[in-house]
Image (tube, rainbow, N blue to C red; front, top):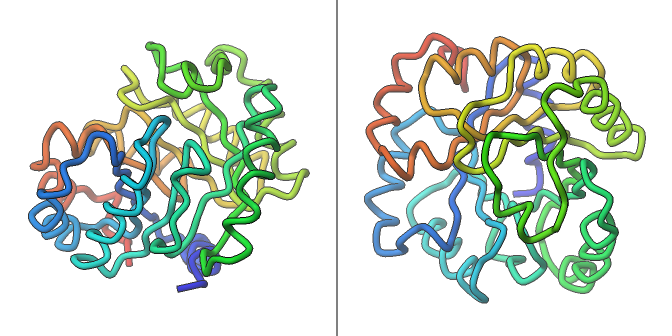
Length: 249
């Protein structure tokens, strides 16, 4: 499955909104895979993202292997470290933390990952990752030592996303952080979307269909939901009624 990015571009052109379910191997019980992905498969989800800031060795590969047994949706790695790379997935968001200035997460980890990626079948998708203040200290902050961009400094967020595109990123990922107290504002999403012409991913703090609708209306091409599904699997049912998802493939 090496057409993930082209399928995303096609959906953007057709104005179809996409929904990724984010699974953190450190928080997800492998024995629940069959039941959970029965709900995922019956939902409007289009992609599965797997990864976290801190994950035990081999936990990602074990989980991805199980997911592939129960779902045909593309499984894309969202790695916090090179130890989370597994050829069992379909693709990988090759993340650069462009909202920070720590060289390890701008290029260092990527250099370490090359030997694994050159011998894999993973579709590698360069992704500019922007961590935005979400009302709580995130695992990303703790691991990288980088502070998020302030919500009120909108121009810096816009310019950072634009710089990511100019550097050759194929996706921009705006993230309020896992368990964020509130999703990103519509104004921020809209302004970033207007400044770039590559697909925009938005995640963090989306806990209701009203919030999800707002994220899509503001211009997000892919919304990412993780914590809300972990805390309430009935959210899958709630999303079936949302008008914003009516045009999903």
